[in-house]
Amino acid sequence: MNSINNNHTINLFEQSFKGPSVQLLDSIKRIQYNSSYWYSIFHRKEKQKLNQEMWQAVSSFFQLRYQIDDQQHFLRIWKEIGQKEWSIKFPLTADRFHAIDAAFKKLLVYYGPGIAKLPSSTKHINSSVQQIVNILLHGGSLSKELIRIPLLQAILVKHDPLFLKQFRDELQLELNHLADNPPKNAQEEILWRQFLGYIIAILPFSYPFEGEKMKIPLLEENGACRLVEYSINIIEFSPNNTSSPMSAIGFAPIIDTLAPPILSYLGTTFPAGNGFTTTIKADFTPKMAVGEEAYAQAKEKIAFWFKNKTNVHLVGVSLGGAMAFHTIRDHYKSLSRTDIYNPPGLYAHCWKGQSYNDGCPINIYRQPGDIVSKMGFWPEGSKVKIFNIIPHQNGIAEVMPRSHIQAFSGCQKVTFLQSDPATENKSFSRKALVLMHRYFGPYLFYYPTCFLSYGYRKVCAVQKYSKILFNIQKK
Image 1: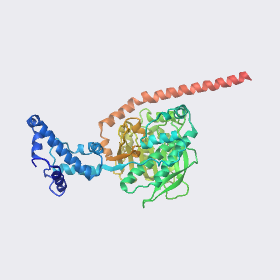
Image 2: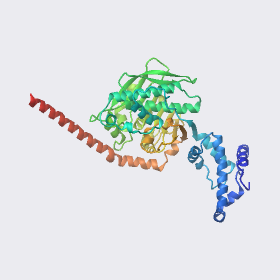
Image 3: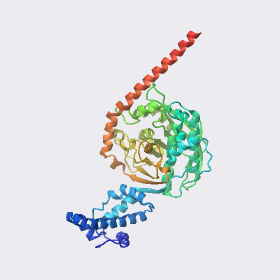
Image 4: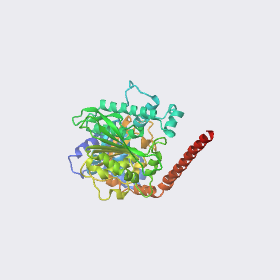
């Protein structure tokens, strides 16, 4: 190969799967130009042309082979997969080429449309709540309509049961839509189940009532899908008695004996939500992993809920995901599936001596730009899978807090890439963030939260006492 012809090169790529691994798939001239400093200086343009032709051949081959219909999407995926196996600066042999292909087969789990928005004919209860759900689940943008005092008060100041009920009702519409549109193949099933689990994981943020009913899709082995009615059980717990408790939600199927019980943990909640200060403290308890102290306080109640239960579906997002990790350590044999979203990893001692090679899958989903899921250590074993979800939609910013709270799987197009937990646990940045969390987190968040919470309680006590004195004097 003294020059590069795209069609000829692509044919050679195809034939390489049948030939020896040492076969050269490159141009001799391109190799010379890239290996020689003088060629790079005096034949720079020709070198660039040959490199560009080779890149076009390689990218065209893999883009077609894995049916990635957009060049920009392919470049993003190549950066995560192909670039780690081969660089344009080096010769391309059949061995390297096969390594690229093997990496794509192993790591590219899904590329295609995300979960579609609700049909335009859907009747929404509250347009503002519908917009919030669209932001969380489908990459919607914040509009001026949402910047209103009543809505801001419901999120930042005062618990609003009506607003939260409307939020639940909107999520129920999304669940109904999932039930009406089951996956058509194994790849779509990964996307579908991820999206379903995320909705269940954010349901605790709507603060449902004890005994309230919700319908959740159940996907059967034959591909059929039906809605199962569940009854809600609220499990409250608090590491101390100085703030409102955080909670988990147990979902029990009312009639359907084949449907799994579901346990969903509340994550770090919004300021007006019950347990706000408790969840902040659970995030940054001194010398402890995220959620470690909170789970220790909840342990007996969680064990009671698990009593006589099997086939449990466990979910959690953020802090709720860390709580799910702690639950796995105690109740793994009672689980049938675990879906955890943008969680912080735990400290290394939490996973010491534990490996998950038998039992239910532990699915960890995280999104680019999310700093929370870059901290701590994952469980390890063949049953642990990490999915990195890349959105392909204009207007989506892969930055905090959007990367942490939005479901990128509801974007127009999306990519799922798999990564290895054992490899990630060796990352220096993970260890560095653990040290920062351990030694700086309590001073930046835990102690200030305790101080403000204490001050708030004192102010409330003074106000209450003043009212009592005023009423006595008035009488």
